[in-house]
Image (tube, rainbow, N blue to C red):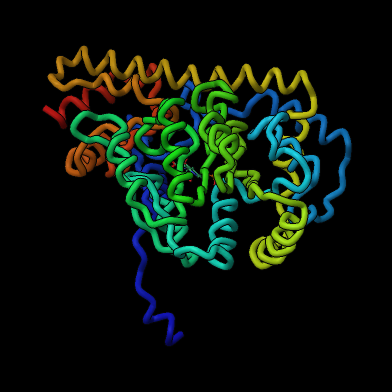
Length: 401
Ligand SMILES: Cc1ncc(COP(=O)(O)O)c(CN[C@](O)(C(=O)O)[C@@H](O)C(=O)O)c1O
């Protein structure tokens, strides 16, 4: 068709494009360090036991398949607020938040971005960290918000560039929109300390910034639900204006079920009713009604105390698996006799390590050794197993010596 011919080919998605390459690669061994999806030490996907038990309970109930409410079920929204801001938060009561069930983190970010583009009175742009998750810029730009960056990573010292970050926040125009990662920063794995979050919060307030808090790893980052929530709970206590976008993909292992919760903090029931009315039309224009299954699983786990207890144990198992993979990788890299200092690998937390490897080195790892990483230097820790860690370490040493 005529006008199709003029459409330019887009570049591939950095993450899912790499997954395709990995799947097509028939050589042995091959190692996928590209995507942030949990794997056991046997390199298998992990369906949480609490999820399996929840599904058995749901199946027995023979529930219908009617449409969910456009913003999701009340019980799911309430349980999500209890999980994120906590039962005692001043915002966890009717009239102080507007929550909807989004299609996981991406879907929540997408609706929030569209809502901000439609109604935010300030500049229609978002400050995102440098570096950040590759899809942040794509998502905001596709939805009509420009993006700019704030410093976040000190490549010299392989650490958080807290001073640079604070300087950049201090320079931001009043009422700018800024995105933070709630915990387990993707891709650096460096998070501000509790004290630093307090300093960031004061600066955010001074600049009257609007915060998009991307909460993709709560509980999964450290194994501690509350520790991983400290960033946005500190900000909420100081009444920072914020929308919190929570994903249940990683901490429930519900990646493909596309379940998450997004909460706008508001000042009054009057405001809440108006915002909800606008969100409903906006959601209707996107996916209309959120999917049933994932939300029912989350609801079962949050309401059944035995399942909640099991879930918290499994979060620790997953977080510890990643911690031990980091330790093994560091150990094996040291054993190669590499002259580099790889200590940062166990200083970073969560799903990723930001290795500082160059694009050329990463291309070599892929072409010569069939080890797949993002060309940014990001290494997805779940791809490291007891079986392949020595191979990975030796190959990294080969391309860096
Ligand atoms: C910071 C951040 N925010 C949002 C998401 C979206 O997650 P979902 O929509 O599935 O809830 C991810 C997932 N990022 C990846 O783990 C990754 O960076 O590899 C991967 O799932 C992805 O979608 O790219 C993320 O890392």
